[in-house]
Length: 192
Image (tube, rainbow, N blue to C red; front, side):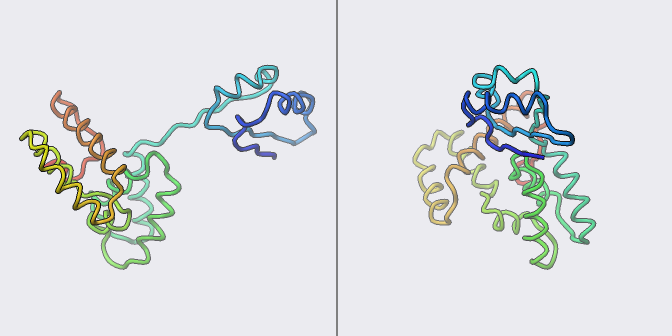
């Protein structure tokens, strides 16, 4: 098996050089071309696209990650709060393997129950009450109130891009609740 990662970086000439071997591969030889930008392959590899099978992979939803975390943590005989599992799943950003490995290694070393507070510190996430404070500032039209909040986050070493992303997710969840929906992965801090 030959795996060509970042296959979208291959030039038209490189694809043409592979054409013959892809048309008549040796027995039991498989080529895997992995890419995050398939549209670029369509532009440079037009002659061989008919000789390839395409498999598209998508991110895994938070519900599936939480369910798998329950199984893994139970097998490891670790107790975990629901909020802790949701925080781990939310931070996974659709990637199961990295979060499972991190959950096993990071949480097994720390004895005791897996709590939301520990997960927040361990993953460097921002607590939901910071988003609640931001929403209060917005609702009260208190622009000056945002600066002390941001100062505290910076002082605590928080990643501000993480805060902006989390604020966007919080606003989306709030809008969804406003139209009668049920957002995924809310912790109890978000629901209160």
